[in-house]
Image (cartoon, rainbow, N blue to C red; front, top):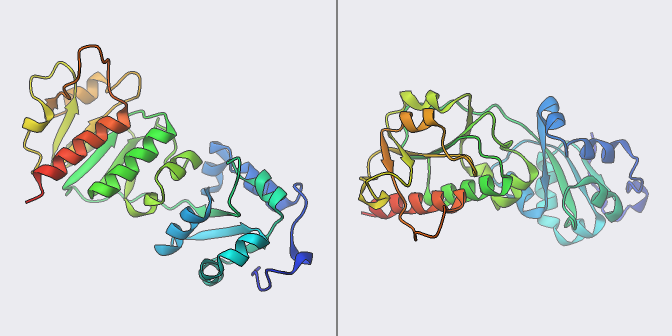
Length: 267
């Protein structure tokens, strides 16, 4: 077991990019390795801070001396919660992460089993074959802001804990239950209306009663929802837009729908 007891102890600092610790962090840049080890990367102070706030299990943390000097309070939290904390040089830290300019801290977190949850939901989003990590992260951040109960994602989508997904959530990843599904057909048992968007729908999204339990079905960035998902929907609505505009970005479309639901429920 390792602890950072003296952040000024330069003798304890890892200075080689070939160190086993550095190699382990770099392995986790690959999705298959993250899945094999059942862990994922957290990069940056804000994500680590949010993980500590909910006591999410962190296995290992790497920090620079400069980061320790300027984040003594968070360092104290980490020393209480994390069994393995290592000092590394800025050059080594840079080699370990996926970002161009890491801010002094990286962590390895345990991938927890995703909760199945009950059939009761007030407001949720189900995503089919979403591929862009930035889009998923933005959807998660927006869903958390609106107060969604849950997000579902089909198994052939981008990894929920992809580093870019985590960064795009701005720390809200830890505050919203998420579940991976084999297919959206698994949502049939929910006690909620399933709402899909399509430009051919006759109903504008704001004309649908969204005060009742609702799950929005959102599709792939290029192909949209599959025919099976469209048939699964209990309601189809459209988001009106100018004739020359082909479609909205998936994250923007989801935000529009979620905030309409929030508006309708404001009383």
